[in-house]
Length: 356
Image 1: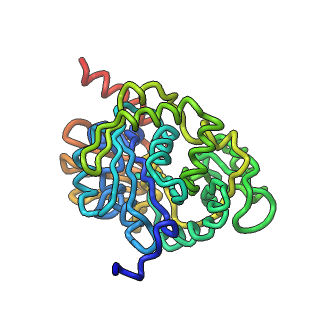
Image 2: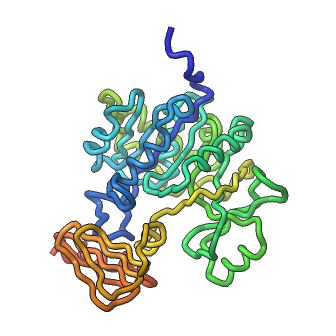
Image 3: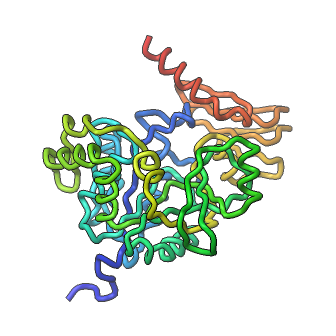
């Protein structure tokens, strides 16, 4: 007899951790070789480790399926080594979130509840997240795709929004709204019933398959053939390159969510951040009395509202305000926090310079 406290597998939610992103908005720390989810940006461990830890309760969660870029294969294999039943799918080429979800949905048993989650988000209140997953379970088991809507606390322009139908608690999604400008974002907040789209989704594997067949047949066909021609080494699966390359590259929002009607939303306040820019890291980080978040070995003197991180030289900032200063052995970034979204321009410039 095994451990009788463990619920049967169909009662456990299986996390699918999407780790294919490069995180260029966090240049120069985040690079293709060492992307954002492998960095310890908040706390002592990496965002990927923190994501794994959220699903550590084996009575509640099954072993994860991680879909990632093959460049991070060795490092992720090491991180997953101690987790029995974990699977690592290494994409031969980058194709965005929908093809990654297609691969996972085909690998899982049809009745398994799959929680699609990014690998590089921060969630301060994990208990609230777990409660929201439980709240969404019934709708997911009944065949809906369940999305998690973050209760907005300011008119953010960096996220898409979810417009929920009337009522309280878990309810149908009326529509998805593209990232709004500041005026529209404020109007959505004033109207109520609008939530940030965290890109976290719960549904049965069979639901994912059927929905992709309906809205993105070429994509799920490419994923199916790529798995048929995959090479397998223990828990590591390398889908066939030729087949996977034929897949359209689309996010799950474009491929499925905007076309599908059977979608529910669970509103949740869980201290969520996508750590999508240096500004959002600043907002999620612990700060001192002068509103500074300064890494170990750095100093801010007579300065306010500073974010300083370095994996290379020591950094001293004196008499400045509202700046992001990020240093690595290869590059230094200095930018006003309110222009943090422009970091991609510097990342592109750096790549061009490096290739000369």
